[in-house]
Each structure stands twice: as structure tokens, then as C-alpha cells.
Image (cartoon, helix red, strand yellow):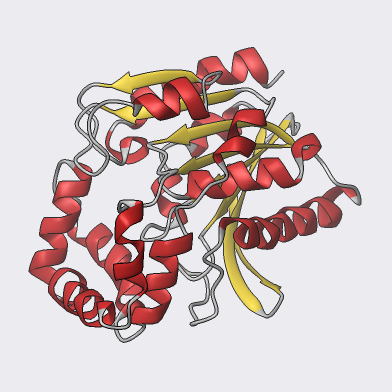
Length: 287
């Protein structure tokens, strides 16, 4: 497996991605998108499984996060993110094959909403969806939206960032809660460094809260490509059970699996189990 780190400028925004190539024939193309607050390295445990199966993999940092460029103008709306990221994939396709190809989509957390929007925009270019702990709903009740929009909310956001991200000890405590265990120190620093850029940019964080989790659930129900959803049974952010409205109303045709001992980041903490499901998914749908 060979990996290349690359940057591409889409509409003035510098986006980082890595290209992982199989040693032999390319059978499939796979797009792996990390959620805000994570980097493409969160998929490192899955890449050997994918490249051994003949997959060309594009591992992308969400615009504004990881090694991608940060600015107050980073896209927060899922539809806009999707257009940026199709630009990345179209550039990869045209550079390699001089034509647009079909992609299997893998994402985590709120990035799952982005690949849903990508599938809605270009369904004929989307072969399947594979989601890990998808966050497809806003993280606060609709009744609180006016509070989040208020200018006074900036102070609350700024205080939270100072306490939980700027403080190394509190950041370690936060990630321990998300992962269900303490990440290694090097990984902590790798995660914390890009998040420090949010300090002093409360308006950008507010836009992310208001728009970065919002998905057109009617469009989600209308998608026709195969979809698998993995959920952590010990997920302290989303709860240990798949939401009934997701399973029964918004995405009733997906294949669901709960990993009982996994937290919010199963692709890192329970990569063997995720690879087992992925292996079966490849055999069934990626031939």
C-alpha cells in the first residue's frame, strides 16, 4: 500500500487528503471522510483492509479541520461541504482516468451527513454508504436554536473552548469520554492542535452547530444505494442505542449493527470488528 499526502484548492479553500493505492488492480474507489474535530488518521486501521481488497482510497480531512485550511469562511452547511468534496473526487478521477467514476462513501459522526448530501447531489456517482456513529440531527433541541443564534452565546462558546480544548488536561478528559479510553499522548496532540484554531472564532463555531449537523431527512429516505450503519453500544455522546427515528423513519432500509463495547470512535478503538463488517460489505456490494 502506497500513501501520498496532497492538497487541493477548491474555491479558494485548501483541502488536505491522502491517496492510498492498492498494490495491484484498482477494483473500487473509496472516499473516507473524517468528522470535524478528527483528522483522516482516524481511518488508518481500515486502510490495509481496503487496499488489500483492491480499493483506491481518498482519505480526506473535513474542510477547516485536520490538516485542511481553517478560516472563518469554511463551509458549515452540508450541501456546500458536499460540493467542495465532490470537487476533490472529480479532480482525482480526472487526474487518473480522465473520466468521472463511482465511489463508495465511508464517514464518521457529522461527516455522515456530508456523504448523505454527496449521495443526494450525485446519486449515480455514489455506490454505497458506510456510516460509523452517524450524527444526522442537530446537537440541541429546536427550542434552543434562538439561544444558539444569540450574540450572547459567544461567551458560553468561548468559555467552553477555553476549558475543554485550550486546557490539555480537560481535553484529555473530553477525548477519554468520546473514545471510552485514553488515547495515546501523540494522538491527543494531533487532535488538539487543529481544534485550537477555533479559539476566538465563536461565530464560526456557532455556524457549525447550527448547520454542520443538519441533514434533509426526506432526501435521506429517498436514497437508493446500499447503506450500513455501525453504532457504539457505549457511545456517551449519542447513547448506546440507535435512535428509533433513524432506524424506523429516516433510514429504514439501512443495515444496522451495534458494537456493544465500542464508544463513539469504533473505527479506531474496535477496528477489527469494523473491518469484519467492512469485509462482508465489500464481498456483497463491491464486486
